[in-house]
Each structure stands twice: as structure tokens, then as C-alpha cells.
Length: 368
Image (cartoon, rainbow, N blue to C red; front, side, top):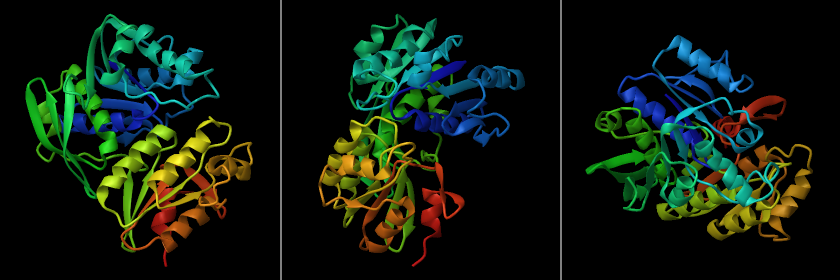
């Protein structure tokens, strides 16, 4: 089976949850996305992001017949026809946010309609559509296939209830097909809808959900997605949140975890969606005690100009141009019991003092 997953946020975590579900039932799975090309949670280094998707699909089908193949479907590639020759058994929509990919799309409606072509142009006639419940009507306009939904709404086919949410993770129950699976644990409530999407994918692929969830009921996230590091009596969370929707969801979840204070370090990428910058500054300020804005792949733009656009003359936002210095400033100065959110880059690497490094590596190497 070939499954495509699209959405502003949630594609990578959905695939990562699927890898764990498949591992629990010993079934082969290939995944392809921002993390590269993987088989059964092992990276295939000889093929990667520069190779055509069709080549990766053939590689998987040739070496492992009857395997399931999941890939992240990005809107620029949907728009330019990169996936035109690919037919899907299952199409998945996680979430659509405003202010994203404005460099590729004229407006939000055009961006949304591009995402929905995954159902109208690529899903087989006997395929299965899976979507966040709030997009049910939109998806039904683009396919006559069976549509399964997920969300917190009890009307959804797969819906969830949060049982406990603290610094160590969120515990929730999942309701599906008359069964209730309790005390499932993942690092953050932000990712529960993506776990539900993964459950619907697995079930649609013929996997036993009871076996896939397993006995431990604990599931992790890939490095760079809500990656928590304890250092000097502080929690440092590295996350890929890089748009207003992702930032808002993360900060609202953090507010529920009883930290002494919240310090947020982030920036905005250059040559990308300029309209989101001031909104992200306002969101960060509203839900943080201290906000430090810094570089995040400025590309051809001036970092200083980007920071000015985020701050909008608000002097309470601390500007530290060099990303590594901004992170170290937060780690050194945040009080004990605080949480420091290092956002935007996830596990992506950049050059610091002539060495390629990631936020994760930088934080691990900090010493006082």
C-alpha cells in the first residue's frame, strides 16, 4: 500500500508513530519525508531527499514486496506535479495553518485547495481518506471514497480524551470502534491528533490496533520534535515549531505543566512567509515570561531585518543575532525550574565556529 500524508504540521510525527506501531506487530514499513528515507526505523543512507520519490517507491517495492510505504506530501510538490504519477491507497490530512508557504501560494484558500488535491487527484477510487475531523466537509468535496476522521470531538471515528498532562508527558485515552485504549503516553499533547491519524492508517492497512499499541503504551517522537533535555535544574525542549499554529499549540500545552517560568528562543526563516513574523512575536510574548529572538536560516535576507519584523518595535523581546549565543544566554540566565523552548530548527544542522551542529548537540555540549 502507498499512503501519502499532507498538512502544515504533523506529517513527520505521524510517520514516526506509524513506524513504532508497525514495529510492535513486526510488519515492514518504509517512510519518506523530512527525516530522509527509512525502513523499519533504520535510515537508508544511499537514497534521500534529492532522489525522485518514484525511485524510492520502486526501491521499497522491489526489495520488500507487500510492504506499506508512507511519505510526506508537501504542497509545493503537489502544486508543481511531482506526485502526478503516484496513486494512493490512503490519503491523510493532518492540519492546515494560515501564514505558511506564502512564497509558493497566492493565499490561504489556494494553499488549502492544493493540499486537498491529495484526495481529488491521487487517491484511488477504492481508497481511504483520513482527516482531522474539522476538515471533514472539505475532504468530502474532493473525494467519494470512505472518509475516516480523528480529533477530540466524540463524533470523530477515532477520538481522544486527555487523562493527565505533566512535564513527563501526556496520558490519554483513545476511543475507536467501540474500544477504549487508556493510559497511552506521548511526550506532548500537541501530537495526540497525529497519533490518532497513525492509528487510522494502521487499521486501514490491516493491522491489529490492540497489538500495535502494545503493552507499554508509550510512544516517542523523533529528535527535534519536543525533545526534552534536563540541564542545571531546567528543562530545555527542542522543537521544530516554526509557524504561528505550531508555536501557539506548543506554548498553550507548556502553560499546563507548572514550570517556574517559560523562556522561548526562536526566529523566522528568510525568504519564507513574511506575514507570520509579527504574529509569532505576539504569540511568544503572550505565553512566555522571556522571549529571545534570533537567527533561523536567514538565507538571502538580513537577520537584523527579520528580527525587527518579529519584534515590531517591542523592546521586551530580546534580540541576539547569533543563534548559538541566544541559546546559551537562555540556558545561563533562566532560573531553576524554568523551561527553555528552543524552536524552529528541530534537528536541522547549521555551522557554528566552523563546525556543523544542531540545537540538540549545542545544548548537550553547554557547560557552566
